[in-house]
Image (tube, rainbow, N blue to C red; front, side, top):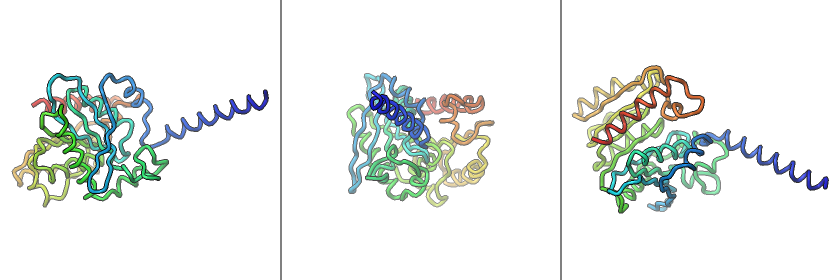
Amino acid sequence: MKRFVAIIIFAVVAIAIGAQTAAAQEWSQPWARERIVKSPRHSEWVTIKHNGRSVETLVVYPESKDKRPVVLIIHEIFGLSDWAQELADEVAAAGYIAVAPDLLSGMAPNGGRTKDFPTGVTEAVSKLNPDQVTADLNAAADYGLKLPASNGKLYVAGFCWGGGQAFRFATNRPDLLAAFVFYGPPPATADLPRIKALVYGFYAGNDARIDATIPDTVAAMKAAGKTYEPVTYEGAGHGFMRAGEAPDASEASVKARDAAWARWKSLLAK
């Protein structure tokens, strides 16, 4: 009997420690995971292979009788987190095919992806090879456009680190219709003339590091004859799209997130 009790106590402690460890991970947002589980939309993980790489990618479909555009989702510096996956579901709920590649695929211990990093996700993302990122994004975009449910229109949205990558992707993808850059830095000025897509920026008022880049980007995009429309949400901090959904969200984050989401959906619907 004592041995049985000891086993039960050990199991409970192990579960508690495991839960605390998961909650402490940079990519873990239990509240977002709960929403994903409750979603009525069809989602699936696919392995997109190209140039010797296998990119694990989440695809979420809208409930629609018509073919719909593809929105490529580029995750934050926290990898393809629970929140990034939940955001993909929200994009599908708005009527779009969400394609969200885990750009850390194969980079975690034992060849895993974001969820397999015990620590160090942000460092791993920040050290990703730019050419590899572009190749992964192109492969994911190509996959999405070939889906039978796709109508052939392509958009990209990125957040934080992914926001910068979304802007950079616009310099490398001529069939892209629009890039939605959420609090990310611009690409090199010399690359801006290659952009064919419309670029829309979403920035936080309390984010001097990123906001300092906006004036020069406005001037450079204008000089290149490109569309760039930045909007700054006062009172919000960097990462407000995620922070505005969290259970402990500040009023400013919620307000910014709601306004930015409304604007984003309006622009997608054009």
